[in-house]
Length: 129
Picture (tube, helix red, strand yellow):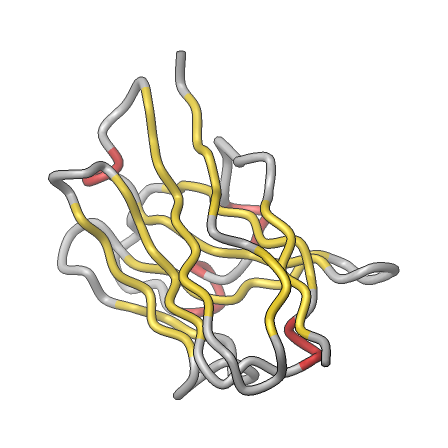
């Protein structure tokens, strides 16, 4: 069964950190670009970060650059999103999803949900004092 499972969400104070995990089963995550997306209440889904499969190139939304870091551990078939200096506006449900690498494409592809499939169920991140 092909499945992605996100974990690591929770309640954290502003300025705090969380590490989200996206674990795959039924397929090898190493062969896919993996993106993180988030959806806040009443808003559409937003691309946060992505890591490619070919050379681990990373992409970030401007709102998280310098604070979030995406990485992958192929031995564990898992992609991570390290989130530091969290802000209340980071509060959302975070999802991971996969897509195929596309040569010569950039952030407009890798941070666009319409090109992704195999979505996980999401994990809630709440940043509040």
